[in-house]
Length: 365
Image (cartoon, rainbow, N blue to C red; front, side, top):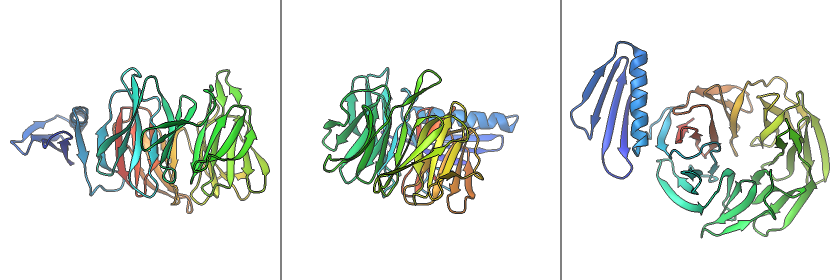
């Protein structure tokens, strides 16, 4: 394996070649330095450590000819809090936003990144902020954020608009076109981001799971017609906002739903479970039943492509990519620089990954 890293602030380069028990490194195309190891494992451990050290020093790894399952770029974002790793794709492009908590919550910075790993500081939120989730609405030119359960919209000029009346102990966030979905008091509400008109609302009271976690999770279908939500650990509610009809789907196992999203064609609803089950469940919206032949184990995060029949999930240190029409697993790889978890989001052509090591990557798929 051969990789070339470049300092993000200068023209300095660092190259590493790793082949079996032999590691060769050079700076700026200069004289190579060779290290031999007694076994392959020791060489691999050393090479990975050296590459990580370079990333932490501000170098970026880039490879515009990356094979599927390998990164187009790797960028160390920083050593801030990574309990949440918010990402938001810019629809129809390979650009995406990422939020980063600086230091001990002095501020949160939001960057726009492109497929070359070029990072642009777009917004800065001073003070104690923690963004759980984010979505970008191109039609409104606004980034929706769930900031410690306060839903806000950030415009291109940096102005921040509060979408919820108060700060609650729980909330949820979803986007379909220019329609935003969030929790505001006792209601789940769907709002037109262009007109600020409230299009739909439904009363919802979250159940407390395991004595500490409110069960509240919701998602809009891509066409904006369906809203799925979970406020009780034993059922999923599907609302057809055009006909005002609702349907309840009983879960096989009572568990807390942590995230949900619809497939690109709106036929399937995926829900990520925890506290009782750690699987990624799949429900068929035509039959309103669970797809029993779909089985997963201990899924930590997942992403659905907004326009292609693709699903990515992270489980046991591995990213798996599935085609949601054939249901075949079409790619599997172990992402680099991940401790226990990562967040995923599809761009137009690639898969962005934000790791709990503070590394952002874009993988070819």
